[in-house]
Length: 263
Image: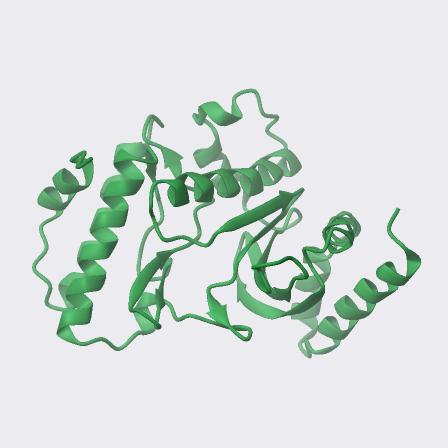
């Protein structure tokens, strides 16, 4: 059992966070995020030392909100807490990426089951990507509709999205080459296709100008029936962005390079 003191502490943190949201429609949205079941899962993670203090919003989306938090765990003082919204997420769109994945054969197709599977799916995808050598947030633990992972940033300030970074010509070329390398590692080593890769889902670690690939919940195994379609879409997005920055790109050549097993 979680102590009453810990419950009160977590309630206070959530209440303080809600009070900082002045817009009533946003408050309603956060009520959807912090439903009773999600709060209890957060309490359990706090009891185990994963969450010591829950901070503000890092990112909000249609399927999930990401919060900054402080942990008591060694080597993970700052963490990102991603909470998938069971009541509002577009689970019909999610089903497209769940169905056909052999890791989730037989899963019930209710809203709750799809979204809970989605959290597990992103955790598994991040693990596979990391093991293949792709720079992604290090996944720590998943519980119900919550995923805890490495916070890409410092002191609660996240590293910027690729779309917002000012770069020299050399830095642009470097980021492009590293992104292509990571797509190759995903495909050939992790056996994954990101399926939503763009300048919005790549952060840039400003300490060393390295790309960090995020948002891998929708990523599919290469054996998925739509994997090639998703790969082509990813390549089109990356070529479009870097093409605008005067990088010479060819979609067909890029796909061939991604599929080339270089090990």
